[in-house]
Length: 252
Image (cartoon, rainbow, N blue to C red; front, side, top):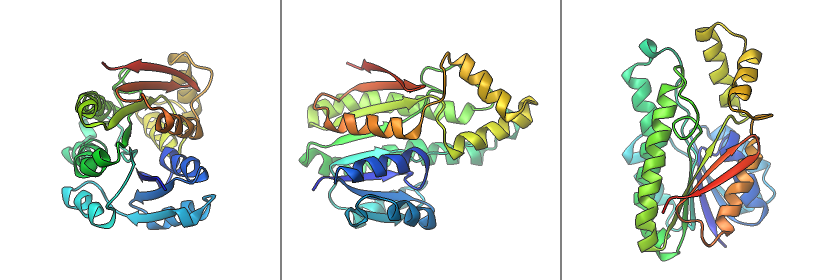
């Protein structure tokens, strides 16, 4: 049985990916901070017996290393974890910046390095979930940390794909635009206070700015992950998904 390690699996895109992969009988190892939320996601899987939950805060190197003690073999590493703080620039402290980079960028970097040997042996795949901000969307003054982290994750993914070509490990990145998750609601609420606009108006404005009819659904990203898993030539792919529409680029 193939095994997928999914970070940020307690909600949103990560939870949707877990459901889609488990449904096709890929064993899913769900990692997130909230054990309570992970248990609920596990309960709702098609095949709960083909799953394992690990409660872990991945902002530190020691936490990432400890995962390898509990998980020895994987075929797919799917890095989703990474909620970042939004808000006014002057109120974004070093702690917020450190948390953003440690959770989303450094955890993806560290887990990729830690599990690279088993991924090499199994000719596995790494799929990173970035974001439109920092990749192709216009910069937002209330989303500086998220955009900066995504930009770093995109460059890392492109570089790692070159090493992956040598080591037979496929590396790709998906950059979703606005996606209907609880996190989007939180960001819109924060932005509404800074920009003095209603959440509804902000969602309408950003949908218009992105030139899409609607935001993306988490399950659309999850289905795209499964397609990449099945794709034998997925290495180096950078995929933009926004409003359900996909644009696929090849890095090299």
